[in-house]
Length: 241
Ligand SMILES: [Zn+2]
Image (cartoon, rainbow, N blue to C red; front, side, top):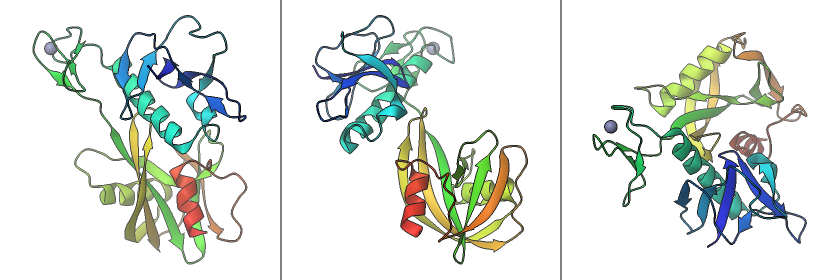
């Protein structure tokens, strides 16, 4: 059976491939928690020992660009499911140890019958423009300029979350929101919805807590420290610049 073997939900076993990339697929599956991915690959946790002599553990993100886009998506799917398995071990109603349901992708409580499915936390990320300028923020302890992003709160629509996050983090009001694209964000279990919005009013000012700096950059003069190429932030910037 073809398998992806993780030591924890964000680190997996891999070995160098002939083409200079990485090969994270192994033929024999051995592990504790296991899930079957959409393409039939098995995702397993191998928490102790080296499963194959030539395998070494790598952070999930280190494999970007070193595997195909299809494999990269499978790695994200595996990571999210294994995170769910490691974080969903006891019933939140009665504290009984959960069991994997035989039919549904869910953990079942043998005592009260509760079912617990993989949970995604939706988040929004927005490219804010003002003519030829884009609004970028530098998070506290951050390492690059990024777009304004945050989690959707209870009772909020995606659009309301966009407006609130930008207002809270930068003091800016926006208008003309347009949905652009989305991306699974398995760090550990989010789904990013990407928007574009136009400046309406306000002075760009960081909240001073989560955000250290906010600044307008001209389309022709973007900073060198941009988000990684595989991120939705980078793709939103690329399609605009
Ligand atoms: Zn229960």
